[in-house]
Length: 186
Image (cartoon, rainbow, N blue to C red; front, side, top):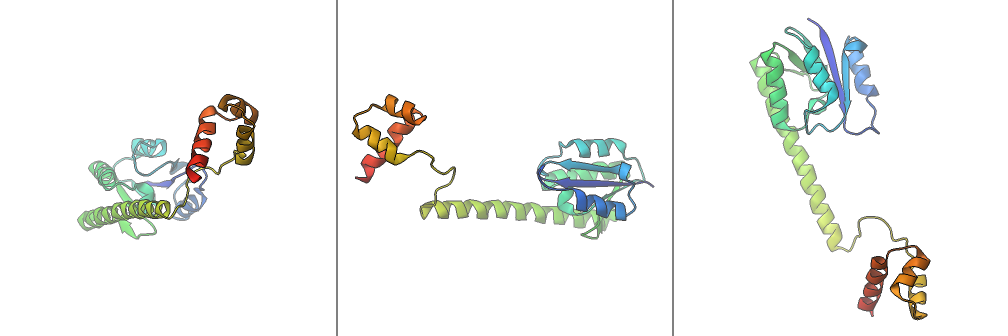
């Protein structure tokens, strides 16, 4: 029986340090810890692929939390089935779960489904919040950087859209958009 470790964070700005430390504290040799800085919504991750190639029957993979292995229920179940088919077990340290035995597989499958449902609820709530904020007039995106006063002043001096755009270093479409917005406010 050999111990392997797997750690994942969603973005390159996040740190794997805490997960790797926990895996080492659980006696995983640093050379057997595989990592990814990628979304968990797909199994197409280089560290995970390499781990899948290295493990053999009787090996155990340690992961700090269920959602570090993956977020999509179908993918998680498929991964667990693939590992099970070759006699490899997965233990989730913080969740105190293991795929060893039928009960362990069932619990992991249920928790993966719950994690997937929670992720979908978060996305739904975020979307609802954006819709509500837009209805209240909240603007999303970059802040305006065009000097609207200067643009209107140049227009008052009878300059055309092309000349205004050139003087302000913006596109003509932007000039037309701002002029249209100003006409609508009057």
